[in-house]
Length: 232
Image (cartoon, rainbow, N blue to C red; front, side, top):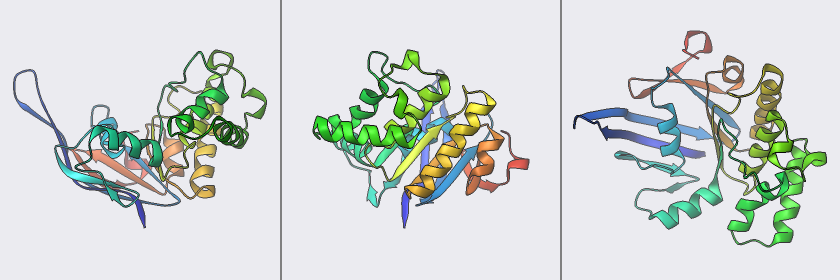
């Protein structure tokens, strides 16, 4: 069963001259459990826009998205926020950790927002930080963590609510080769071990090579491709 689907998704914007800019032109996609799908393409092709639509951060102009079997068209902002919290994890190029809180407190945040107790949130946060190899660093603030540790904390936070799908936008874009490969290995492991779906937007060939499928976004549509032929 697919954990994430897009059906005929279009996204258009009005340009400064009043003209229409077509970013997505009928995207269809299905992502299953234990599957990592890499989306590649030229800068400005609309990859981040697609990720935002898939994660219910933005609404399509036409078409619809299904997350965990639930169509999200017609949901109001409060319902969308609840769905995102419950079913979708996000990892961005910049970790977006809250600077004044420790790694553990950052991971606990979405759990507490969901209404669970501090004890439940703390236990889950500790479990996930151990999972990403940061047991000894969980009480450090982001400024006290390396770039790789910050991004692994962001992955733990994305997994906090046991999501059905994780969406990652250039997750290793700010990391050196060694830390990038460590993160790539972690992402591959969690997809398989936790049986989630993942969509990752990347220019990194090494990460794209780890994916179950590589899709090229070009001209507003997705097509199957191989890493050697893509612009990454």
